[in-house]
Amino acid sequence: MAKAKGILVMAVTQCLRGGVSLGAYAVGVALEANGVVSGGDMTTEAVVTKLGYLFGLTNDVQAIRRMMTLNLRGELSPSSSFRHPLIGDDEDKVEARHGSLESPNGLNYSFGPSSKL
Picture (cartoon, rainbow, N blue to C red):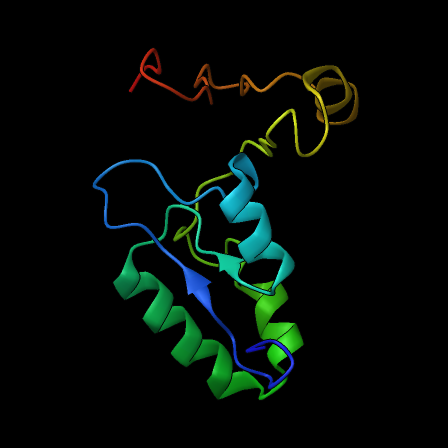
């Protein structure tokens, strides 16, 4: 609906750590399918500032939608490409396509209560 009208909708988190991963749960997948863009771990202030900057460059909502997922100045951390196994790719396919979810700097992009911070 909003996407068809050319309205950009961003999903951000209020949490101090972590971020939005729309592909992790069925509701997020539905939001993503309807054009909602994940703000990842950007703060609300970073999203508003980035949108202001990008709309100052262009009015092309599709281009802005793509640029909001790119790290321009350190406002967005690398994502883990996590997809819920019952909804999207299974873990083997993800590893085959993207490699291990452990980054070269030793940070582990795992999810759940056992996650290391």
